[in-house]
Amino acid sequence: MGDFNLTVILDTIRRSPAGLSRVELAGMVGLSPQTISNISRRLLDQGLIVEAGKTGVGPGKPRTILQLNPVGMYALGVHVDPAVISFALLDLVGQVVLDSKIDTPEAGEPTAVMASIVFEVQRLLEESGIDQDKLAGLGVAAPGPIDLEAGTVVNPPLLQGWSRVHLRDSLSKATGLAVVLDKDVTAAAVAETWVSKTAATGNFAVFYMGTGIGCGLVLGDEVFRGSSGNAGEMGHIVVDPDGPPCDCGLNGCVKSTVIPRVLVESAAAVGLVEPLADGDSSVVVQERFKQLCDAADDGSEAAVAILERSALHLSRAVSVIANVMDLDRVVFGGPFWTRLAPYYLKRIPELVAHGADARAIHVPSVVSSTVGADVGAIGAACLVLEHTLAPRSERLLLGS
Image (cartoon, rainbow, N blue to C red; front, side):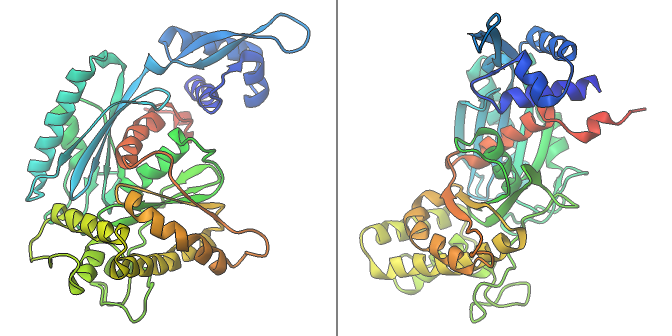
């Protein structure tokens, strides 16, 4: 119970960037002043919070403000994408201390990918110079599906040969760090709740625009993972019944209609880019996708039409999810989002508003993430902070 109360107080302070006094904490969390005082002293001794000046409110002596100590703890995150592997080292308040990117090894073979991750993790930690005792762990965001209990990645569609890869335990053994594994879209949702510059509360979805497209869900201020940790798989929502066939047997699914590889193939069909060859890697897709967006930015009507048509199709999937979950807002982010944003934001907000079943009552807002293009890696580091510091009911269970 003491550990749970500690995380409740720490989380409450985290959600108040300007800081809180002990009296304010007592009023907000419902614990006694003595309990607040004892836990505050414990957090101060651990270096997780600091006393940040005093404030006077009404009569009586000024109250001491408590804030998170940025250098009290760190977390490292890695996002595994078929095209690029991203890394981010965060301090306790979610600021990026160091980041980097490396190309995913050409073959994408699990052993080669893990070796690259281990090498870069060790390099970043050496460069950072942080006290290793202050590193809470390594968070890993990977394409789904994943087996949360086993810590494995299970046949992600864009990573060939990844059949039940024991990513969590292998990286923990190789780095000596505690490792937390989760889906990349879930990590993106966690990032929105931890480090977004906007009030990331309520009910919203984070649509991650990377080599693939996924959806992270936050319901009632809490990240929703589903029964197996794989909530947000949206690849087989039909967005164009007359569209191309999907490997699931349907036509016009998100997976077969609007992911970057499909857009590149559409661009190649009208001569905007070189056609993709069998076996072309996700890195090649990324390069051709950039060429498509460059053409649209230069005024190519054919390129603009491809992007705007994809916005129309994706809006249908967004509307389905927004209606089913009765969302407050829709957040877009990820490495491909920056190039898509000018075209998608021109069309999707209006299309989602038109498709909102409850539009007479409210319409979900559509916004860009403020976390940045590296939301996957930042979210992976936030997974560690969430696992270590957020109040969780299992902390109340008695162990053997």
